[in-house]
Length: 128
Figure 1 (cartoon, rainbow, N blue to C red):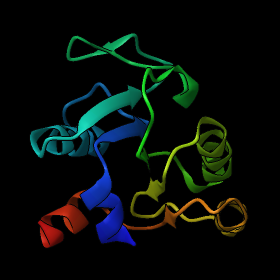
Figure 2 (cartoon, rainbow, N blue to C red; figure 1 turned 180 degrees about the vertical axis):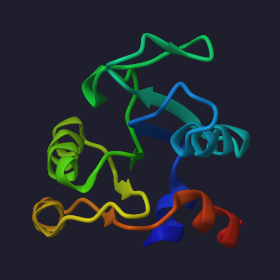
Figure 3 (cartoon, one colour; figure 1 turned 90 degrees about the vertical axis):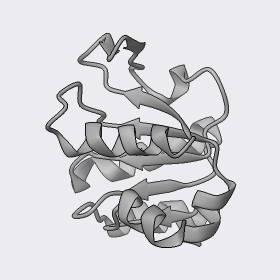
Figure 4 (cartoon, one colour; figure 1 turned 120 degrees about the vertical axis):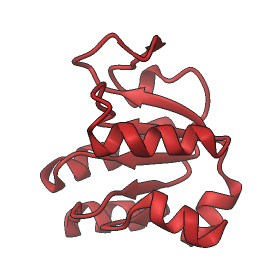
């Protein structure tokens, strides 16, 4: 499932994308851009990141989302999954340490692939 998500994706929305270069979400988003993905930052607390618009929510992203990459604490994952379902995202990827059984159950019920507690950069580097 993880390989297929990465191989078939073009657009990744990074929820919790920081504007601080020392933060993991910033570094991984930069890596994903370098690997050829279109990356949309989702962070309602900043207007831009490196001159690019930051979006307040998944609903604001101007094109279909293949992967929602989550850099929020576990207690926020269920809400992100609901938002991903609402916008028709093809999958959700929760970073290391992000895990929620209720979010997993909701995702499964909606037929939305969900990866939890895995680093998208590490998996990408392993596969490609």
